[in-house]
Image (cartoon, rainbow, N blue to C red; front, side, top):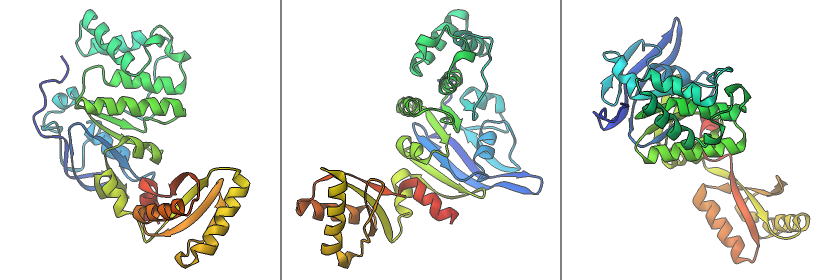
Length: 322
């Protein structure tokens, strides 16, 4: 059972010149992309960028207007049934039945994949433990929290050992604890060789879980690659950094601002008291921020923590969207 025999290509997903039109609306424009096995790949972009349309094609829910797509080396247009056996798709806020218990819901899908009763129990047991819901197996689906329902749907999606897992906004409606659990689950799956492709508007979540990303803008893939490489290409000539200091906050924040004004005026840091600390403008990126921190520590400033502001994927999207 499952898809253990399907790894026919070095690429989990291959898209070549893929286009999706809805009448006069161009949703995806000539997408060409290769995603290897074992990646957590984030597809990011504003509403209407083409993320859901892209996922719908890859999941064989709609056909591309033209172009080629392969999953595990299988052409999804020529052999859609074979492609479906090796993948799983979880849309945003997929429903769960109100009148079934959690284990009954998962058993239904296990049996639909052809597992025997014994095999099915083994599969949904493993999946529930993987998503940390084993203790809820006898609860009715209707009684679960929104975040738990999302994890039940994730358990359902992986019941057949998919090699490719496509998740559209999986963290939608989840509380911070559930999102943290989701990150751990997806990273664990990728470490075992599953390719996870995920979209999300919670940009920090993607930064925390993804090894590679692609940025869609008006249906066009305008940048992609390893996460840090994409982020670095988005760093402009100036970045912001929030510096938090130890000690009496009100006093130390004022002293730090005064110190920066008096000693580093030539750097044009323009320090501003904000967000419980001091926000400064730094000419350059992460290296320049690190250099400034080193200077401050050398001067005896007791820095409790610091955080780049508007950096990472979020800043990259802000730059792209103007």
